[in-house]
Image 1 (cartoon, one colour):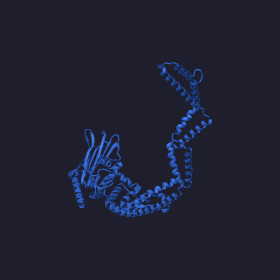
Image 2 (cartoon, rainbow, N blue to C red; image 1 turned 120 degrees about the horizontal axis):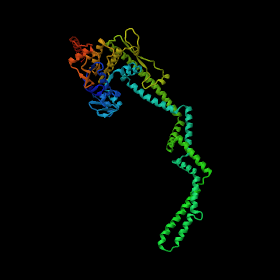
Image 3 (cartoon, rainbow, N blue to C red; image 1 turned 90 degrees about the vertical axis):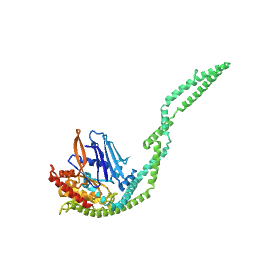
Image 4 (spheres, rainbow, N blue to C red; image 1 turned 60 degrees about the vertical axis):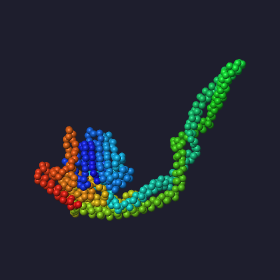
Amino acid sequence: MLQKLTIENIALITHLELDFCDKLNILSGETGAGKSIIVDGLMLLLGGRYDKTLLRYGESSGYVEGVFDVTDKARAALEALGLENDDVAIVTRRFTAEGRNEIRVNGRTVTTSMLKSVMSTLVDIYGQNEYQSLINPLEHLRILDYYAREAETECKTRLATDYARYREVVKELKSLGNLEERERNIDILRFQTEEIEAAAVKPGEDAAIAEQRQLIAGAERIRTSLGAVADLLTEGEWNVSSLLGDAVSTLNNIPVDRYAELYERLNSAAIEIDDIADSILHEFDDMNFDEEQIDRVEKRYDLLAMLKRKYGPYEKMQKFLTEAKQELYRLENCADLYEQLEREKQALIDRLYDNSVSLSEIRRQTAEKLAENVEAELAELGMRDSKFEVVFADLPVREDCEAHLTANGLDHAEFYLSPNLGQPLKPLIKIISGGEMSRFMLALKVITSRTDDIPTLIFDEIDTGISGLIGQAVAKKLAKISRVHQVLCVTHLPQIASMADNHYYIEKAAVSGTTVTNVRLLGAQETAEEISRLSGSKDISSATLKNAEEMKRWSDEYKASLE
């Protein structure tokens, strides 16, 4: 159950701490006092979306904390997420004006989805979103499945397993394609693999060819320059090689040892110049490209550029070649695989259909029990002549079922209701009023609460459109539920408020030039006064107080009878 709730800087709340009892906790207050703020704070702890407009005006950050007793189911959820497992779960959520928010469970940071997986085992909330689910026929089957969850488990497990494999098989068959598509893919892959293999591309070859192509483009200019340098070094009367040779001979004629070093240096220079001249002449000869060489380089360059555009650089090209050869082998040898997959697909469809039929039978049997229970609960809530039925669409035959297969079977179901004697059953969403919707929602919750193990239930606006004796019937239902679950209920009805085990009053006040929302636990006298106010008495008199005290006394006696 929820032991304690702390809220800071949400809407009109600056700081609030509430300790709840384990039975029926009622929250009431004047319109606009901030009853919904408490629910908004709880929704954040359940994994609801944070909206910056929730933050109190002028504040940079806010905070919500809930302390919950841990059930076995919650303990398993905590362990599955690797979170600290204790007797309590402390859930905190900090948020800022910039939109950032931090969520922690027992001190560990968690994601919103992780938070939801834990809190769904601890708290169930019934408000406007749940009403919306009732007016959406697509949600009706989900509600029925929740009621029938234990009976459906085995069948749904088989369906989920087979449907997952069915999707895989369909995907594999699609990848193989039909015979015509397969032959076309084989032709394409064969062409691509042969094209790459025939090219016999080498690592780094594209860069080498590009460099050679650039060299050819400047060959004439380079050859002219090399020839000029060669002439200066080796040709003509005043060539460098000849002059250096003369200088070496002349220096060698001096018979003085002191010039031996100079002779060696000059002789080395002459030898180096001759070597340089030979290298230049070799390069000069290499620069003499013929048309055949030029054409060969251009064609190779164009081929490598084309392959690079189609398949990527060398590494990617080789990877593509490997994968293409594997896929080509698979397609060329897949006739047997295609037939095998097709047989498996049909067997899976058979199993999916049979299990969907079995699941539908379970649902239809459960729907009859649900209808009986709903009608019984509605009778106690002032709708004694109501008739309720879950109406199923006909299942498709086996031959036509493939287009309708899902992991949840083949059923389409919708809630039908006749709230008045002698009236035909009609779709729930077309005839139900606000007050009837509240009672119908409560009836469903009463039924499901008998089998689920969620400790805390929150009802927001469960009393919409009801009053008088119907309000008293709803109050009695809430009291019954609160004997086995902790209940938090926001209400404006005196009949429901009088059933409170703890009654909290929400009020606005002006403090230091600003408006704040406060919540306080009411004592016996204050509770009677609040019940009087909810009864519509503007000015509290001794008579109205006496009526309120009598209502409270009767409610306490009723709760005692439930113990």
